Image 1 (cartoon, rainbow, N blue to C red):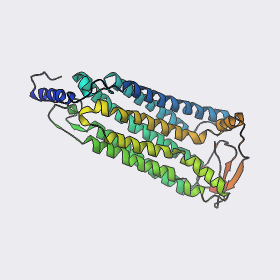
Image 2 (image 1 turned 90 degrees about the vertical axis):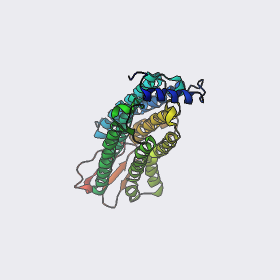
Image 3 (image 1 turned 180 degrees about the horizontal axis):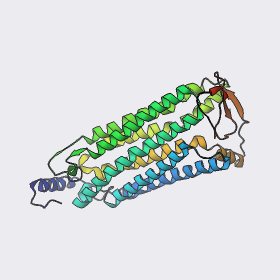
Image 4 (image 1 turned 60 degrees about the vertical axis):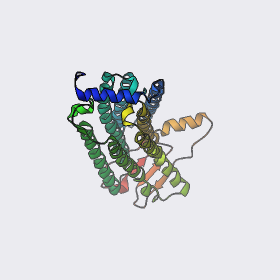
Length: 333
């Protein structure tokens, strides 16, 4: 750490004193942020466990989409750990209540948190695409899914590089008084949010044309559409998260950025939940039976290309190679 004799450090401290004079230092949203993040992570854990329980009950084994969502939950725990560490270092309090060591610790943890966040959200997207890959034995569907996957992976790697290279020298990332330059953080949030929202919309839209080509009743098409659109809440969460982050004050990130960190966890958790919901057929059937409701009998739905999609009261799905789609059968879990 530079000594107080450094004029840049002295100027930075003077600026913080001036800023703190305008802050209400009694304001504290640490507990609110902590509870929001812990509850969000707990909800996603429940749905991941239910997903694996449903797979186990059907005895069809686990697919790539299941393992990817499990890895994404591990990254979610990493994000949660970062947020809790940030709170311990003063996130949720105004910057005027923090020491220099707290400020530098927060800046370092934020770099790690950003890398974990973009990787986490990308893994969830890949899990959904892997699920589509097994659901739909159609060349066109798989081709577009792979294109979206590569776009998402490229976006992920680019943002990790951006997080690591946001300041020159890197030391300026956590010691802002050091001579150098940094990119505009609000522009970074824009670069994170807009591509993520666009790929979410593309992923949600991907199966819909194939659903509406099914030779079945309109209400069945609507039901299938509703299943695949369960993830639409994620888009709204992403948009709201972006709006929250654009309101933060650079000189008081510890307080004004805390709601954005909460919405990071809400977005990640809701994404995991949305990715798990289409796989919870056995659980939902059992739940509806317990509360006195019954699901309709399974129906074999045949597409124009001749492949069957058996919606047999949430049976598990299985697909083989995409070269002979007329013999494919996909059963939704």
